[in-house]
Amino acid sequence: MADDEPRFAKGDLASVMAAHPHVADWVRDFESRYGSRPMYYGPLDRDAKKQRPLNLIYVTREPIFVHIYEPPADDDGGGTVLWFGLEPQLTEEEENIRRELVETLLQEAPTAPSFTTDNEFENILEQMIGRYTILNTEASNIVRRQGRLWELVGMDDKRITVTQEQRQRLTYVVIRDLIRNGPLEPLLSDEMLEDIHSVGLKHIHMDHKVFGMVTSNIRFRERELLARYLRAMSERIGRPVSDNKPIIDGVLLDGSRINIIFSDDVSMLGPSFTIRKFAEETISVVQLIKWGTMSAQQAAYIWICLEYGMSVLVSGETASGKTTTLNAILPFIDHNVKIYSAEDTPEVKVRHKIWQRLVTRDAKNEDSRVEMFDLLKAALRSRPRYIIIGEIRGVEGATAFQAMQTGHPVIATFHASSIVKMIQRFTGDPINVPIRFFDNLNFAIFQEVVEAPGGGIARRVTGIDEVIGYNKHSDGVLTRGMFEWDPVKDKHYFRGMFQSHLLENKIAAMAGFSNKRDIYEEMLRRADAIQRMADRDLTHYDDVFDLLGLYYSNGWEHFDRAIDTWVGVNHK
Image 1 (tube, rainbow, N blue to C red):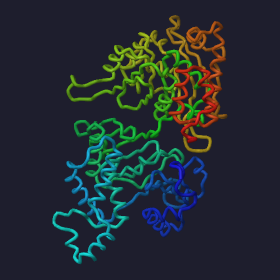
Image 2: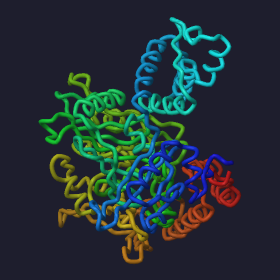
Image 3: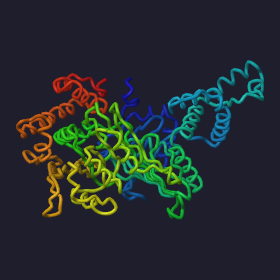
Image 4: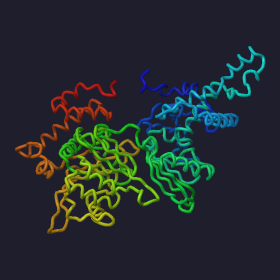
């Protein structure tokens, strides 16, 4: 069986229950309470939204499963979609064994082999757990041979007798708590969740890609337990939280962004946190085209602009997918140039050979603090081809425009839903970019969260606008819309044919076109190539990056031929 093939067939709940006792226990208990049995859906897709009644189980990462249930409208909570995380549970006796086992593991840790990755750490823990537990069948055999149990377990023997199922459960819980995400592991294992909201001791709510807002069965039952968990998590990500510093932003080990508000006097209902999940694999621009986020023509336009050093802002409201789009378009930059990234929280993902990645550093001592402004000043001295700013929020925006003025193209994300609002925010407090400097920015991509055609939520690039220049007579900035999105037809339209200031007046000459309008044929040629990649399902980020690498190293003909013969990750 291939690694990406589902282990259980859709509808085969019996096999899932046989392989995973915790799922079997849950299903039997649910059936006795509510009189209905969920169906096994397998890996989830957007068609699950049509399932009626909404009562299904899907796999996230074995042994973790999720049960989605919408109670009938006449029941309490009718209309609320419930999300139940199903993972192995320990009995009270097993919890005592776990504590004893963890204590033994910690005592033996100094003599354990060294490791450099979490996977290596997991393997070491599994081996140690196997060494310090003994299966009851093995114990029975030895006892029968030797006659007395105390001969098996001497004073110096730290092994604990367990069943095979107990060892599996103990291994899962110990690794979950020591290496992974503790009680939040079921949530963070679910790639269908986007935002996770926890306020005090209330049940955790999540934004689900298919079912919208859902309510989980997971919550912290004691404030001290919640506070201890958040302190431990914040320390693991290098941003310790405390009553003196109650608000922190950081990035979890899987790349998800977390915001913690710690003190009760700041968060009145108790410590709270919000996690914005990111996909484990970087989303490619071809995948965005397949999803309808943008069109192949938009991608081709962005490609030409980035190849020839244009500065761009990816702009939109919160959770509109700005960072995803920014990461997706980076392979359009020449693969042989230096890229410099500056961020508060590391979210930018670059595969270029020369990538200088810097993040800010917070510190009580002002002399030890490294802020975004410091990183951007350093960028101007390190001679990168492109400067990438994870997110412009404040005064560093003025420095970004200074970088553009000195010939360093800049790519960044920004919070604004239109070109007018973007200009207003940049030219007002606290950024205060002089309006006459605004034509250093070349174009802006605008993105929104919308309702998906089949239900749930989706992202769409709703427009791409060019910045033509400052008009001193009106004391304003001239802009022109190149692309727009029709929400009724869910289509992207190119409105810039023979109207593009960037393509005709800035890029055409650099690209060697004697007739500047030939640049549009070049854009359409690239759009056709990108669409062929989409049609061939070459959506993996590595495939897209490597194919574009052929363009920059071997030229168009080699790249164009490779599209039709490329054996992508999805086809291996």
